[in-house]
Amino acid sequence: MKVLVVNAGSSSLKYTLIESSSDETAASGIVERIALDASVHKGEGRGGKFSKNVDAPDHNAALKIVADSLVHPDEGGIDSLDEIGAVGHRVVHGGEAFKESVVITSEVKDTIRSLFSLAPLHNPPNLMGIEACEKLFNVPNVAVFDTAFHSTIPPHAFTYPLPYELYEKDHVRRYGFHGTSHRYVSRKAVEMLGRGPAGTRIVTCHVGNGVSITAVKDGLSVDTSMGFTPLEGVMMGTRCGSIDPAIPLFLAGSKGMAPADVDKMLNKKSGILGLSGVGSSDFRDLVQAVDAGDARARLSFDVYCYRIKLYVGMYAAAMGGIDAVVFTAGIGENAARFRSSVCDGLDFLGVVIDEAANSGGKGDRNIAAGSVAVFVIATREDHVIVEETANLVGHA
Image (cartoon, rainbow, N blue to C red; front, side, top):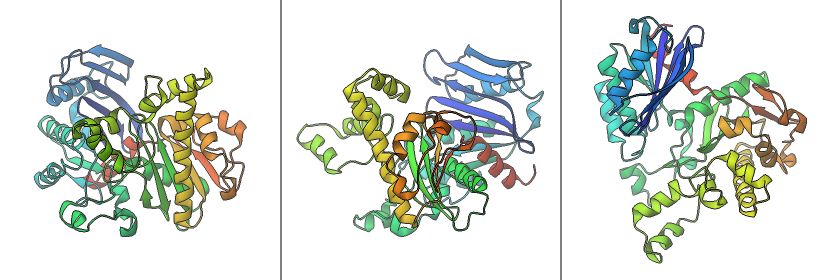
């Protein structure tokens, strides 16, 4: 069965068409700048890569562009839309309502809508993508939630030390994100360890523009760095991560900043972008500035790696030891200097990197020189969504 994977953002729509039985990708791409000027459609099909300007005033138009492309002789990978058996959607926030993937119904959509306040930047466009697909494809739609993998986190780890009524009435708690990625790479790490999940203690580091670290024990998420929102945790591309909670109060009170401006600073103007002074949130630009001798860039790099290192040690303590550290996503998979810096000084845990293996080699691999495995694993979130979708629809 061919599954169309859709990841709808506020101004973009990513897609991948995958054959569930063979795990092969037939076509993929992204429509960018939806509802903005100069919309563009980039992708790859049986004729190779392509990029062209398109008119995408909304998600319905963007999805129609995708559908036409899928059956295009060069851009696509199928001859008829009837070959698509189901659509799997990445949905960021499932709250406490969804602990696993579900076939989408009107009730499911209502619940996703009720969670808009918990993920105002993500769930609304996710739902727009779902409803656009329902209009265009007469096949089952499945929601795969970023938060679902973290539903096994125990109360002592997800509860904040705030008045308990905030949890009871407003569901303020740690949820965690990037769950599909953490699930895939932790499962792959278990395979690479050559054992079942029972007894394993793995720290997975999803490090891209967004960053989250997860403690995976016995194959289950038991703690994760992102919390009620994706702002908590380690320093990221534009997000500050965990800071003294009195700082926003200081900014609002002493500096006279409006709540919306504080929110924008913490989410959009901090992290690498705000700290480094290089004018970019791209880690590659940061490293280039470090190599040029920029002191602020060096400080930013050190803070970034240090805070991730703290979580590795903290989660080793939470699990009573560690069997593997996993690096994944854009920076985790590609930045050897970053991996080396994070692991430096963790030899007391048995985490030691083979620098030759770290700087060389390709594909999923173990770069450890100590007793604890250090894996570099390419995350494959689309393939997890395909697996979940095929299992729920009931045939492959």
